[in-house]
Length: 172
Image (tube, rainbow, N blue to C red):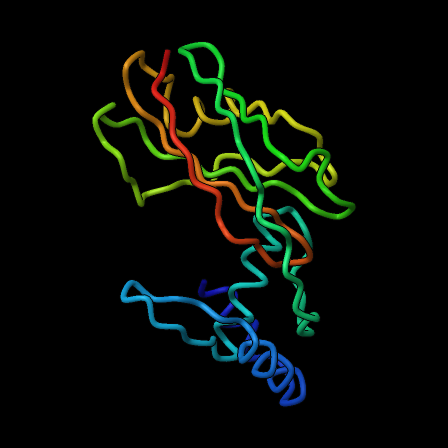
């Protein structure tokens, strides 16, 4: 974040005004259900951290707001030796990628989780299913039978993420 803060200070007034205008269009909801918009720096951080996570170059100029479609369905295949996500729509649209987040393993009795880690980003226009086993094991360890794992999927396009699709499965 400090690198983005330093980069923000190098922007021209016109570039900052573009980010302020974009931020006013980027609505978020807080934990109390109240909507708010981002300021210019918040929009700059949101877009650029998402671009970098997707493997794209950061941008100094505010892009036009894009609203990628939320994934519709997901079927999780989860064992101690496999972890894949069959999702729709498939394939994703041109320029769209799937961001796959997952939780650390927890008790099978849990029904909600809020601590997700970015596990994998698909290639553009990828087709289902997404095999995230190796990436999950590298980040959070081998799935243990009878533990629950929560997933959170979002579609990416041009620095923006869709709404979330949440699901979970017990390791079989």
